Picture 1 (cartoon, rainbow, N blue to C red):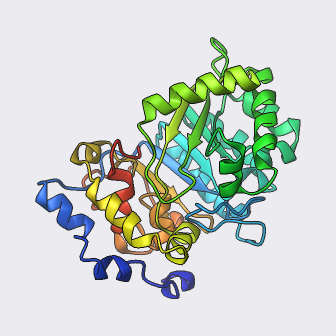
Picture 2: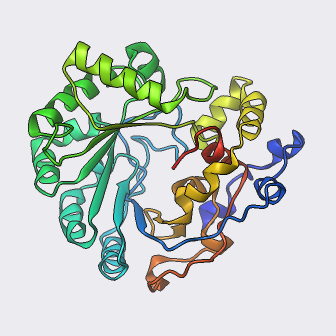
Length: 328
């Protein structure tokens, strides 16, 4: 077992004391199974290095983290992408822009999936300079960017001082390149997370408000808004405990379980690769230390195709993805 997994404090003890049913018990109650379908998305976490230390970060990424994907592991990811017939490749971090080989990595991967996504906090993209933005544009890479709130104070409560206006400036630059503009084919999506210990409002209404306010106040256009609940892992879990919000929050997530979300959960069609090449069903399971099929396995030993019907590792944090409208 990876040393950092062996040393990680179990994340279930608090939930057990609250007598919350395990996620598997809840699935059983609703006569549901959580197993892999055909894997169509390869998610790659290129490292935990980030220029921000967001309060809701389940991976506890930050400027003090030195873990980034090695050139050898990148080669192994590339080999899998070339033979895996993935429909989507999703690059995340940390701030993936801060990996020194991110430009080359993007270019190598682009031909091997119809959809390429780069997850950005916007401020790291700005620091990288115009060359990466131009490369993403030339390869029609989808940018999915974090913007927790339309309110500067609320947003910076989560992400840190100065991040809101820097993010707005980056969105304007992306718009000028064609991102988020009709007919451009350059997709720009935003992600909103609650700033406190509560669930997000319904996505449709919030997306309409984001479109209206960003257009009227800043002249910014974008394609879609994804509104997600924060996952009680990592830094966010610690904040919930320290602020005495943990019990109420985890009970709220479990009470909001929506069985209709289970067929569309991202873990059913995703293979997630950590910065050091280990495999997971999603990056929340990375944070929780739950490897693929509960056995540490490395990308160097993975041979596609990945068969459907394999079990999916799950924990209490899975209630986040099944609360309300879900997390797809």
